[in-house]
Every structure is written in C-alpha cells, then in structure tokens.
Image (cartoon, rainbow, N blue to C red; front, top):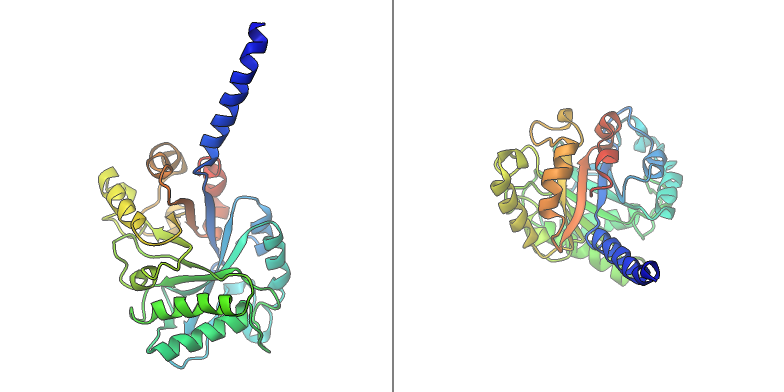
Length: 298
C-alpha cells in the first residue's frame, strides 16, 4: 500500500523536475564560415549541438558598393561555388536549426549613408538570401531564416531602418517571418547596434562578453551581472551569452567549460530573457569540444 501511495507523488515530482529543468532551457548558437578546417555546414548541424548556425559574413555592402560574401575556403561565391550549400542549409532547417546570415564583422567595408541606402541593402538581402527572387542567389535556392547584425564599424546610423525594412519585407510578401539577431559588444549600449536593437524588432541578441575586460566574467561576478542585467533591459526576444570557444578564439574572455557550467550559467539561466550561449566559432569549437562540454548545462 505504501508503495502504491507513493507512485502519484513520485510521478508529480518527476514532472515538476522536468518542467523546472526545461522552463529556462537554452540553446547554443555558433558562427560558421570564417575559418579553414572547420566541419562542413551539414556536419555542424548533424552534431545536434546547435539551435542556431550563423553564416559569416557579408563583409562588403552599402554606400553604393556591390555586396560580397566571404565564407573563407568553404566556397567561392564569385564563381557560384557557394550555391552547393543550399543542400546543407535545407538539411539544417529540416533538423529544426535556424540558419542566419551575418552582415558586417570586425574586418570589412560596409556602412549605410541614408534611409534609401538601407532600403537598397534590405532589398538585396531579401532577394539574394531570404524570400525574394534574384538571378544571382549566392547560396542557391535555400531561404535563410534571418539576418544577423554584427556591426563593428561603418558608423551607427540607419541600421534601425535596415531592421525595419527587413521585417516589413517578410510581412508584406506573406512568406515566413525574417528573424533578426545582433551581436553587440557587452559595454552598454552598443556603439553600433544599439539604435537597431532599440526598435524592438530583434528576436535574439548574442552579446559578446569577450574582448571587453570591463564586463566579461573574469572582471568579477558583480561587473558581469551588471552588464547582463543592462542587456536584459533591451526590447528584444532572447539574450545570449556570447563567448569564445577556446582561448585562441579571442584576446580575452574565455571561460573554461567547467567554470561556465558551475559558476556562470547558474547566475543567468533563471532570467526570463535567457536564450543560451553563442560561440565564436565553429572552427575553435571543433578543436576544444566546448559545445559538447556545456550543452547539458545551457
């Protein structure tokens, strides 16, 4: 009788434990495409470690320039060689993984000089990578899930206009919604992405808590949490903790996996805006196994 009486209690406890474990469950986002020797896009998605894969970068655009995509030695877009990635993108999306295209980066030639310029760039991205049509689609017929703003130079103006135009294009065309993400530096507000993020249109914000000693975890729990709470205040969907996947991936800010799991993630996982962890990049993750070491804790 005692054993039978305990069964409903154990069942309820098990359900509650499962709910608690998953109510703030996060995912891992990873940047792919900037290094030789990293796993292929299809292998990246097949690993089961990531919910988001960000293709990097369209590093040249705006101000009258012809946009250019650079995916290192993975393929040559100028010869149409990146169209073969369409099959990999479809494979990722069938697994439920969102595939976004990052514009900008730390080394490029880009910027916007007017609302009209932003509108032209939005139209290019829509027709070349999203739900539009173009005779030249660098990644073939695959329709990416969204655009990532990794703006680190080129001025702070008109990125809000670009965000609005991209969102509106998705709505007007009746296709799937265009996801927007941003990768600001952790000092708040971000010099370049701040205005765009304040539109309230961004679904994901993966904050770079590296190469910024004043707000990364190595500067102390207080400084880190202060920065995290400021980012929680922005009108965006989910906030991600952006980290290097190895010591070699950034100048500062690497957090060993064990320390992240036991001391860092418990501080932020309960946040209603917590989305998970962003890693730079797949190349470094391949060499350290960082995502595998943190996945069950994210």
